[in-house]
Amino acid sequence: MSEKNYEIEVLYSEEELEARISELGRQISEAYRGRSIHMICILKGGVFFMTELSKHIDESIPVTMDFMSVSSYGNDLQSSGVVKIIKDLDQSIAGRDVLVVEDIIDSGRTLHYLLHMLKDRQPASLALCTLLDKPSRREKEVKVDYTGFEIEDLFVLGYGLDYEQKYRNLPYIGAVKFI
Ligand code: IMP
Ligand code: MG
Image (cartoon, rainbow, N blue to C red):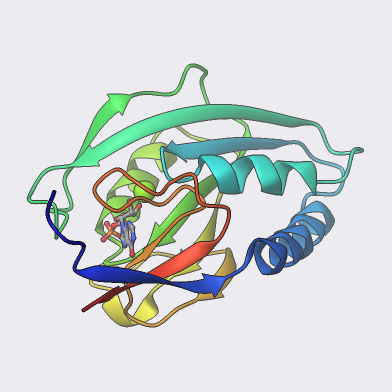
C-alpha cells in the first residue's frame, strides 16, 4: 500500500458543528413560522447536515424531506456546470416551500444550475442552506440564504463530505493538508 501523502486537521469539531447547526435550525424556524418546510437533500454530502438540521427545526413546523442525487459532467477536480440527475426527487415541489440543503458551495456551478432547474418546477419559495461556503472560489453567482461556516480555499472532508469517496463518516470537518 502506498504511503499517505496527506494529514487531516480538525477544522470544526462535532460540538462546534452541532452548536452552529442548532443556531441555524432556530433561525430557519423563525423564518418559516406558520409555514411548512420541504427539505431537499443533495446526496450524498448533504445527508449528515440535513438530518442534524432537521432535528433543530421547531416541532410546530411541518417538515417533509426528499433526496436528489446529481453529478456534474467534467473531471473530478472541477465541475463543468452541467448537472446530470442521477436520482430525481420522488415528489413534486410545485407550490411548496422548498429548502435545498447542501454540504458545500465551491465554484457555485452545481447549485447555479440546480436552483434554476428547481425554480422551473414552480415551488412557492426556494431557499438554499449550506453547511460550508468557499466564497473565494465562486465562479457562478448563487444566492445563499443560510450558511453554517464560510471557509478559506481548503479541501475539507468529513460530516458527509468525501475525499475520493472516503471519510464521509467522520463526525467532524477536517481540512486536508498535503505533505
Ligand atoms: P461546485 O459546483 O464547484 O460549487 O461544487 C460543489 C460540490 O463539489 C460540492 O457539493 C461537493 O460535492 C464538492 N466539493 C467542493 N469542495 C469540496 C471540498 O472541499 N471537499 C469535498 N467536496 C467538495
Ligand atoms: Mg455536494
